[in-house]
Length: 82
Image 1 (spheres, rainbow, N blue to C red):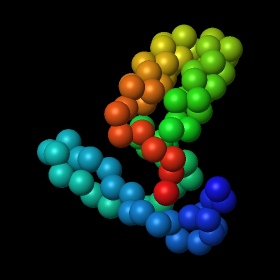
Image 2 (tube, rainbow, N blue to C red):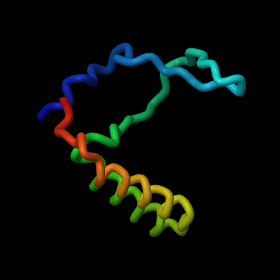
Image 3 (cartoon, rainbow, N blue to C red):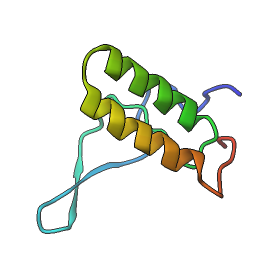
């Protein structure tokens, strides 16, 4: 599969940040790559990230990411990305 969604132009999705009152406010796009938990490739990516965080000495972040990877691994609706 080719990552055809990325064209180097305007982002496909709006970026919104949750406000303290629970509402959302649109913010300018920023450089992030988002992984959906239902994506079958996500657990491996998160596991690699967790291992790298541990290598750099951030055990707390590593443990949080390991838990997130396990949550992704157990998704009943897992599928290949569209």
